[in-house]
Image (cartoon, rainbow, N blue to C red; front, side, top):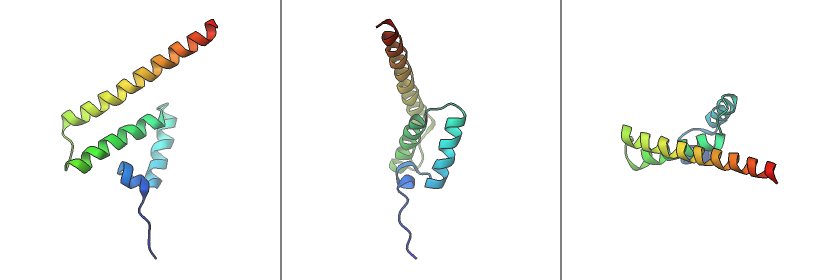
Length: 86
């Protein structure tokens, strides 16, 4: 029996079944799952390019992901307060 390539594994370096567990844990701990996926995808891309990302690269990826969260929170905050004033 032939097995198809796991697209989730190709994109994130994590099997589809394991990604479901990551999603459940992210939601349980109040993390935005899209953010977690973007972080995993960035880390996996670095692993594919190189053999293993160094600490500085991992820090850069995490800082970038955190910056996206901060911007998203700011937009949500200002968007919510703007709607209340209307």
